[in-house]
Image 1 (spheres, rainbow over the protein chains, first blue to last red):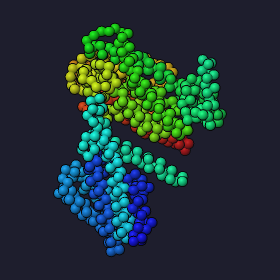
Image 2 (image 1 turned 60 degrees about the vertical axis):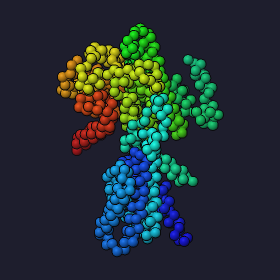
Image 3 (image 1 turned 45 degrees about the vertical axis):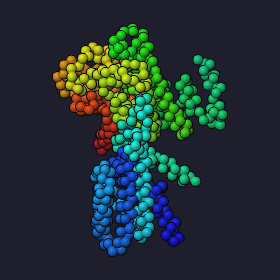
Image 4 (image 1 turned 90 degrees about the vertical axis):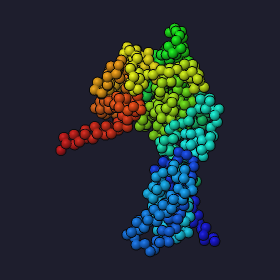
Length: 210
Length: 382
């Protein structure tokens, strides 16, 4: 049991949440982070979808890593990812149709998400299934929390709602408050992602000084 | 004036490193250099050009040059207010009304912008840079009279942080911070920056952003042009400036006086101003359609064209620095402004976008001219 949660494994899981975050530090997966974060709900669904797909793909590839010929490994990775994405996309269409309409092409585009290929190439090809699973979950959640944080501010200030529920009271609108229209555009998402990177850099520098 | 010097000298130890109030050291430094030229000059090494005025004095000339536009803006606020309500309170009252509307805007813009600058300067242990003195004055000039104060405060904070400080502060920014403020306002709160309800002040509450039901509808000349309607303002009105529009931009004459002061003081480049007008005039002459009441040259006198050309395109930080590049930089801005006005139905006013685009292209233009000069000299050396 202690082997399952060794120091390396903990690092594989917690690293991507903070100091090695795929979005804020490695600057991967920015395109979807800008596209799906206008509201919190699709951001959460997108984050969870990516988490599930990265984890599963990591496990499958790490099981196959010794049998796959090196020259066709990218093709194999893509086939695995594409299959998983199709499954997730179908499940979403069946059980969460509204959100899947909102996410439109971006679920399908997970296939080309840099985080996936990056983890498969960099981690799953060298490590066993359990470590790869932890790494996948960690990276997926690292991606998800950035998405949700961006979406939180965008929805709150752009539409005055959270999860579609009105948060900013009508009384404030009567006083002359107006929703910030720029928050609904991807421009604001880029600025917010930049702010998250900024904060993480400061924390990193402080940690390095200690 | 000697007593100010005495007070400052007495206070200096308190604010210096180790003093009681060293946390406000940058604020003190700003006040001191505001009143007196700093007594340290650059050392006698390197290829620096010594000049009697530092950038604080230079920036003061820009404020002085803006005074005619500011004063006329105040008068025009009162005038448009009276016209909308169908009354005539006389010149003095109109001016005082405008003063009352404009002053809160100026205070908010300076308080927010300087507050952030001082905080950051103190945090980074640098002195406060003076760039915001002009920016803080430009921001109230380029917003509509009914732009609420809290929205202006947010936009100013955004511009100071994201257009200036993260690039390294005064002198390092790519885009003109005042225009970034306006661009932010334009995209974040379009209902407060465009349309026909923001240009004329119906009641005083409108101008500070309180709840108001009696917004006054009045289209700017460019709004009418953009909607394809007949322009109801006479050419003379657009030159004198008694038309609805952003606060400082309406009077062509006041801006022209400012331009003369700036060029005389050597602050602004006449090359940029002239080439902007040439570029604008050329495109306006070619592509202005037949609209009742609108001559092609009125493109240069309405909207923010003149104000942008004189006060914003010439910003020495964001403009081209090569002498020949300035012609091209100005021409691009002037031409683009008219192209956006004429061919993009979404934006009746194009000067803001045009100058931001010019800012973006300025380093490239500079690079081309510097490289061609280097190549020329290299060929000569062969």
